[in-house]
Amino acid sequence: MSSRNELGGAQPALEVTALNVQFHLEGGIGEAVTDVSFRVHTGETLALVGESGSGKSVTARALMGLVEAPGRISSGSIRLNGEELVGVPPKRLRELRGPRIAMVFQDSLSALNPVFTIGQQLSEIFRTHEGASRREARRRSIELLDQVRIPDAARRYDQYPHEFSGGMRQRAMIAMSIALSPDILIADEPTTALDVTVQAQVMALISELRRERDMGVILITHDLGLVAQHADRVAVMYAGRIVEEADTRTLFGASAHGYTRALLGAIPNHRVAGNRLVTIPGSAPQILGRAPGCAFAPRCAFATDQCGVDQPDQFAVADGHVATCHEWKRVQNAD
Image 1 (cartoon, rainbow, N blue to C red):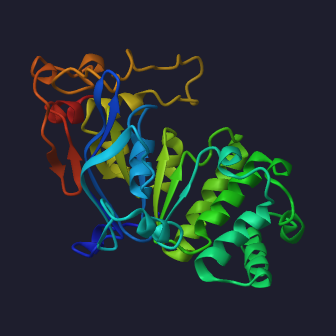
Image 2 (image 1 turned 90 degrees about the vertical axis):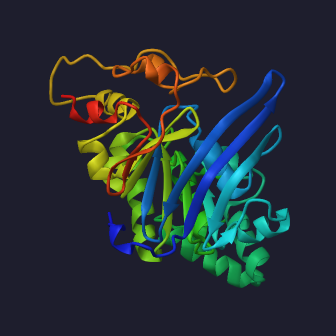
C-alpha cells in the first residue's frame, strides 16, 4: 500500500463532492446516496465498505454515468482530473469510459457477452477507441490476457466466456478494464463467488496493476480482510452516507463511529476456538421512509436520545480522519 498524505493540496484524480442520487419510486422519492464526498489520487486505493444496500454500488454507477431510471443524480459534483462529469452529454461520458475511468463488475458472467469470444470483446475496445487494425487489436489483446495471468493467452483469445472459470472470467474483465490505461479503476466486489485462493490472486493482480500503471483504485467490498491488506484509505457507508473515513491503519485501530465499530466487531476471530460469530442486531433501513436522526441509531450500542432525533454533522476526529457521529469520542474511547 502507498500513503497519499504527502500529496497535500495536489489535485486528486477523482473528486466527489456532495453527491446525491435519488430514485423516484411509486411510494415516493428515495435517497440512495446522500451528500457523499471523497477523493482518490493516482496510485491510491480507497475502499468503500458497508453492508448490502448501503449505497456502495449506486455510488460506483454514478461515477461511471450508469445510473438508470428511475434513478438519477439529483445534485453534487464528480470531477475526473478536473473535468466535471455530472450533466455532461452521454457521448462525452462514453468517450471517458475506458480511457479515463473504468469498472470491474462483480458478476463477470453477466457482464461478458456470451455470444462473442473473449478476444472479440477485448479487441473491440482497441478498434473502437483507438482505431486499431484487426491484427494490431488481436496482438494487444493477447498481451493483455497474458499480463493478467491467463495461461495460453493466444488460445484463450478465441474462447467464449462459458469456457473460462470464474477466476479467469474476472481476470478477463480486469484486462478489459485496464486496456486503455484509465486513471481510475472501480472494482465492485471483484472477488464475489470466488474461492479464497482465487480471491487472493485477483486482489494481488489489481494491486500489482495499480502500482505498475499508477491508477487510482476504488475497491467496493464488504470483506474487511481484503480492505486491511489492499486499501490505503477506507470510507464506511451506511444508508447512503459516508459515516467514517480514515486511513486503513487508523480505521482498524481507532474507529470513531458505532457502525464501523460494529463491523469490526463482527470479523470472525479464528484464534479463539469456540467463539460465536458476532452479528449486528437489526437491519439496514429501507430507501423510503427513513426516520430522522442517525440512520444507524436503532442498531447502535452507543446511541443516545439525540442520535434518534438529529442527523449528526461530520466531525474532524484527527488529521485525515472524519466521522459523522454525535458520540464519536465515546466510541473511540470504548474498550
